[in-house]
Amino acid sequence: MTTDLPRGTASAPRLGGAALLSDEAMIRAAIDAAAAADGRDVPVGAVVFDADGRELARAANAREATGDPTAHAEVLALRAAAQVMGDGWRLEGATLAVTLEPCTMCAGALVLARVGKLVFGAWEPKTGAVGSLWDVVRDRRLNHRPQVRGVVLESECAALLDDFFKSQRP
Ligand SMILES: [Zn+2]
Image (tube, rainbow, N blue to C red):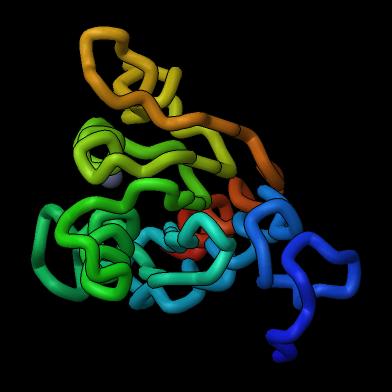
């Protein structure tokens, strides 16, 4: 990867700047991350990028694999990203991309982490907390509200889940 190009130039590396890293590209990375899920775990993937568009951490849902009820992809990726970013627990300016609309726990976690932006793929009508059942990330009573963009590559993200649940049926 070249590093001598000024930021924002058209020939800069694909992952070289947030402006050049599209929401779609970030969701593609999250789709890749989902592939690491254990066969028993619902394949949800999450990736955290810093303000310059550099990938800090990625994770797949690992609730079954770890026996940990909090091991959702978003929580695992946020934890790992904070270690890499090295600014304590804060992930200011970071973007979290996830294949599925976050639940209440994950929406709460990304607000608490001060994530700057959330991008998600498919809706989760049963547990979603970014508009489906609740809207935790845009609740005006909270002192931090990330930017949100939903339904990015929705059909690809939904297909991951459809394929998984089809494979679970006898
Ligand atoms: Zn969650």
